[in-house]
Length: 511
Image (tube, rainbow, N blue to C red; front, side, top):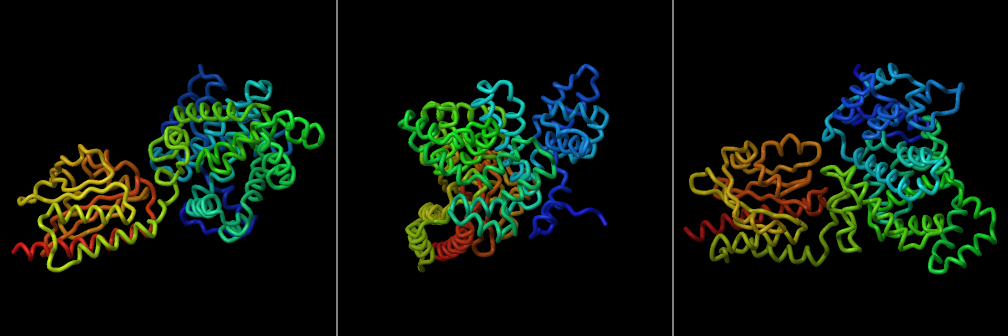
């Protein structure tokens, strides 16, 4: 029998089974990065440093090489703490053989949950280097590799069970549910315990395991330090409190904490820069650095912007994007989380529009009047970008009748039906098509480029509406390109039915 793919793996309920499953998963490497490293290994002019630098483009590749080197050196030498040491330990030939065994995929074929999490790790490394590497220059390699690999125990889970991690984030981070209860329900084990155990199995750099030990075993010390950090407007009082507790001061000033602090900043920024989680990590880092909070925040934002320039990728969310938004903005529509459901007031407005669409005889004076109400109903149910198109008499061209949330230029869009198999399919019969990261590449390639530009993202609803047995209208709608609220999807379907009723009633009225 062929081996199970990650998507087919069952969800373990015990620590031992989780470790066996996640340890056996081979992480995919972007094809372009894979090819560049293979070429460098075959080039006699490439130094170990050159090869290591190229490997850093793919966090999965870094992890795979370190794991392989540490696995073969078990019981003989200390674990390799850097990529260059790992390559030296394996040798170029065995390193190349390892690369040949790893799955190489086009970047867009790698699941977005895994790519997103690896980008958080790269952002963490940028924060760690920017905040701490100059101050602790002798330890820059420990800081660099530790921050890149701190979240790596979650990478195979993001490949095998992405929905579990997305649900954890939604319930724990955004809804504020108990982490312990959610984790025992979803995973059967505590997530930090699993990460620490897997880090030990892989023999990851010591500062990674120290970070997990701090989160699991030193929570009391973390709380004490955070209380002092909150007094950031009185630095002298902070120093006095730390001086009065030498054990706490020594614990805080451990260089290994740089990895934990950088990872905390990068991960918490995924929600928002001003979220309570993000503020806690910024306060702790400000205290560790003995740096005014405002200066620390400015440096953190600069590091995020530098990370975005290096690591941003289409379809992923980088928190540097939020730095140009209103400060209270939260990541929802562009990230992994579903859009929020419509408010009670919005749903009440939506019901009013739907009731108007269902009136008989038709109250609409003309098609523009009808489609305006249809557009407003779609917006009220939570759709952020909407386009309604109608066919001409010859059924060769689609012209825009209504838009919402799109540039004004989109109102003049005209599409040739013959150039798009998806448009032809939608117009052949009443159909609803929902694009997701799973099928987006398949269908978006068959859509006109103008539509793909207007509706950027991986999530889109397409619906054809008929009147008197003939499709006459297409509806395109999304919630900013990110995952839909399921309530909004259901309301979209009901709205489409109401619009069809209105179209039918309107045609009979004209007759």
